[in-house]
Image (cartoon, rainbow, N blue to C red):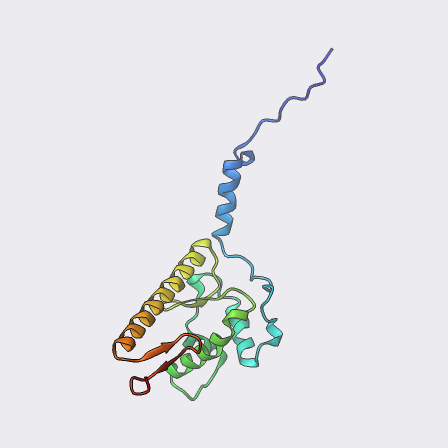
Length: 169
């Protein structure tokens, strides 16, 4: 008479949790499909025409290695063809900046690479740390500026966020 107990199936390396976790990490390091609409962001069709064209173009820039600089975006979309590259790049930056908080997908920028969608957790971490560093530098600059203004006799009014000159104090 045979036993009714089923024999356990032999496990392969792919069945073990450790290898499954490593495999999932490998998958996050490869370029992914463009992100879906982020809740709270503006749908791409609600963006101004030039901004929408830029969003459509940058949607394909997944990963730092596929980033595009502002002047390259202007050139690709033929924005302000009668201006020099620097002015065209400035125009693109001025168009993008007010919309970054409601952009249809996460958009990072790196001075040496340009605009791109982060493709890996490392790229997200790098951009986040870069932004945090800039915030700290600005906060330090503001503290120093306010301290020097106080030493010069200016009075800061926190309730209104305004300053009074030494002559008015």
